[in-house]
Length: 471
Image 1 (cartoon, one colour):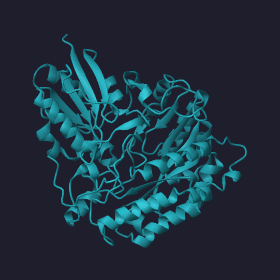
Image 2 (cartoon, helix red, strand yellow):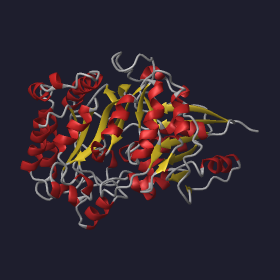
Image 3 (cartoon, helix red, strand yellow):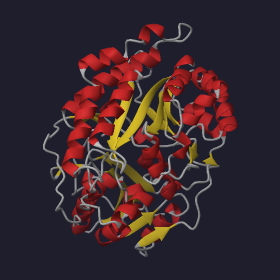
Image 4 (cartoon, one colour):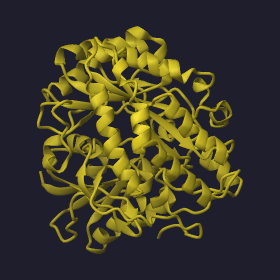
């Protein structure tokens, strides 16, 4: 059987036309090591992270595969054009490319839309036979029953931030693990249901545990969009994780706060932080985008429920809803400070192509441009209802910076003395370290979740409302 050399690339985001470079990345990409695990043995695989390494376009490779988020699509197109100009075949996929197929197709030899599991073997077989098709899309979502263990051994682990000794004694970086796909909620701004569907699919728990055993002592990120979407199954998973004695973080719905047993088992299994999509403290904003399961919630009680179980929170909030005004945006930060939220992640509402929100704003003529490098949650890429785009961006950065001012950090952590005495303080150490990191990246005008420690952060990363679709 003939052998081939396959280069898998994670593109950087373009900032002022140049790829954003990181000193260290926070978490390895799961997509490419997982795709490598799906790849037949006659392909020799090289994984390149464009934000960490320079791409050698003259390398001896037979095939290039590029994964994408929406904000990485313009850079992915640049990379694809460079390789194709040298006669190398290029395959592109991922959430970003799948959302804008008409933009991507002229720049690639092959576009994989949606999940790759059910088509990847066929794509590579067609390439080897010289009959690679321009577009592939599975007829159905894949089964989660037999997912392979991701090939993190192909990554240079020294390029990633290692958790502090208080979090993990392992020399490994934070390891992303997947236990389910899908989301039962239909939030208008979210692309998860477009890509993975609204019906939850679950990986067998014994398979999850077997993968975790590959990384003894590691610190995990459970990448599920809602790890507790099915509470009985989540409890079974957490019970199985307890003997491993790992620490982990994951994404939860606010609904988990109603189940003390669930939270207690999560903490016993090693959970130190829950990323919770609150999105807004205002009911009209939540209703406007279909986030109705958060309407009427007492968010103070929600915080208390997680904390009483020994889990701290990273609260996700969004500004820029049609119901938002400059006053409500300032109030959002005021409320988060008053609730003594230890860690907050703030985004500007972003109409990702393929979502209900994008369709609505596009129909209303409110999409300002299609420079997708700016669709990163820090730019107003549409015309807000109660202010202009520039004002929304200014209020966003002012609110984010005010939350992470030294004085407000001290105010928000003033309740640490009441942290449950029967629980370790590791969760608070984690959020304390997070405040230092968030404060630094916000000062650089970069989003804290941009991927890692920024080498050079250009402060003039601004939207151009007149920008056209990148070519």
